[in-house]
Structures are given as structure tokens and as C-alpha cells.
Length: 230
Image 1 (cartoon, rainbow, N blue to C red):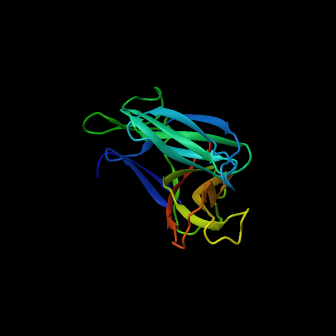
Image 2: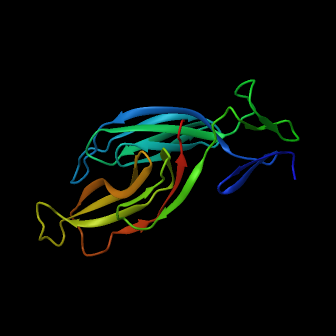
Image 3: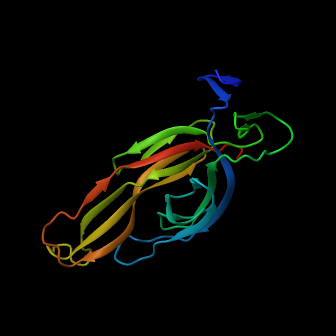
């Protein structure tokens, strides 16, 4: 067994040694996103963007309302993310940037573990990614899970989507004048619970619909993380 130490808990134990590998908290940020309104043609699609510097960033989000965070662009070690507001109301969001652990200590007290190459693999003064759940969704219905005693945030690993053909509000009986709506799985947090549901991201007129099923879907995948005291 590599040199290190063990932490015992209700689930067994955690081995902290030279092979330990986790992502550490780098920084946090917050914003208020303006309302989105994509229920009909046109409308407003609101989001906030921010850029982090790192190697392999993972962004965990807490949000008052339905939201989705996704990578927009990368330039070298700079990664730009967007958080989309999935509701027609102001959305207060907070994000947590986790990334590969670096070799810098966070203080002169506590416990540190190094590997054979003298790289710091654990520092008790740092905050590391704490995964509570891995959630795969293949339905568009509202689902909620609770994590008692935890303050939860969510990392969107893979977005879930639907394309849905709808009747035109102005011409509901038409067989050719339709609307094509894109929907995205979004999540919101409420203290120790997490809810995920499909929300509309845009709706466009579909004036030449001839009966083909321009619909599709894909699953969404989420990491639920514990950010208590972060």
C-alpha cells in the first residue's frame, strides 16, 4: 500500500496517498441573469458568460431557477462558459470552478501528501470536489432529488435536448404552418435538493412543414456535488 493515511466514515474509508487524485476548487463567481422568454417565435434568450484559466475545468452551478452551463470556447488555457437562464424571471446563479490540483500548498499548517515525484496530491487546507451523485436523464419530465444536510451544486456533463413540432398559435389548424421548438434540460437547486426539467431555448416558425418528424432527443448527464461551506 502506498504511504499515506485513511479517513474512516459511514461508507467505509478514503485512502489519501500518492495515488490520490481529485479536482480542487480554484475560484467562484456569481451573477444575476435577465429573464428568457422563448415560448413563441422570436423572444429573448438570456445568459451570462465568464472565462476561467486552467487545464481541465469543471463548472458546478447553484441557481434559483432552471439553468444550464456549457462550454462556449477555448483559447489555450482560457475557457469561456455560458450559463443559460431557462425561465422568464431573473435568475441568481453562483458557479464554482474546479480543476486539476496544482503543486502549490494552501498554508503552513495541516496535512500534506506528496507522491514520489514530490508533487503535492493532497492538502487539508484545500477544498476538493465532493461528488454526491451521477444522474442520467432520458425523460423530459420534472424530476427532483434530495440530499439532506448538503448544499448542492450541479455540473452538466452532457446536455439533454428535444426538438418538438408544435401548432402555430396564430394558425393552430394549419398542416404546413408549424413551430419548431428546441428544448434543453436545465437544473435548479434549492438548498439540499436538485430539480431538472426540459425548458424551451428557442421557437422558430416552420412555414413549410410537410409532415416529416423534425423531432429528436438525447439524454442529459449530471454530476451532483456537495459545496457545503465552500
